[in-house]
Length: 358
Image (tube, rainbow, N blue to C red; front, top):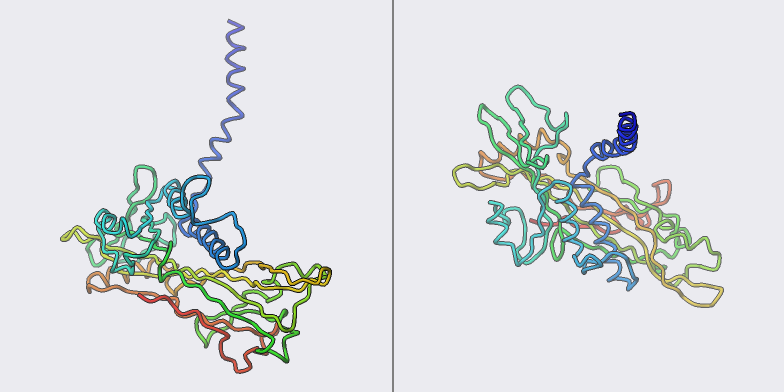
């Protein structure tokens, strides 16, 4: 009997160290759709830089060691996190449109392009579940714990709603690249100060300019090597890409059995860096470099205002239209560190990233 008690005690003692680990796994927060898509955007931009510069990268749209494309891997990550995600392509456009009971063209999806779409319900947060006296939100949970849709009461009637997040995968108007060339000829009097200039952006010429990074930081840390100098006759290139992510609220129409896109807000994530040739005095050669990456995101006015978006969605649904919330065009400026001197000399934007168009 004594031996049995000792054996039982040892068995229980061996199990104790494993218990906290299991509990810790249960407490790991689920990544948001935006976080997963942001990682995808980074890898997609790096792949584009490879195409532009010919420099190798660990990330590519083509199949890697897993045998999956970048888009397929992202969809798998979203599904593993408990979301319902798909890679819409020209091959499955009609099939998925029918399966998901919605109209892709109404959402701005081109049948010749490629997209990643994610379907999800309401997040369980106080901000998203806030309600006034005439509305209510009820979350419906999927079997795996992930929300699939939610119910919203307006004017005494309860409507089923869901979020559908859309981001570009390939050959889509939601993905737009920009390239701008800085040359000594453009800025002959201020070329020596160009490295200290700050690249800024704004989505409204009347609002404050938001700094992105200095040209020096965008050109990378190669300047820690005194052998490198910028040739006065050389040009520097600012390359970037903007990927818009659309977040729709769809309302279920019981008469047609379709999910109707009724409201959309959007975020635009841009990535930019400098690249070009630097002169290396130690070997009397010009050498190509790719600089550091800067990332910045703009959201439309209502993007994080869930309560207003749901109200706009149900009102637009009843009026049989779509309430759209845009980011607008993005203007880029190049100014000194005090935000006083514009390198264009006229206060006009250096260049503009035009908004994608429905």
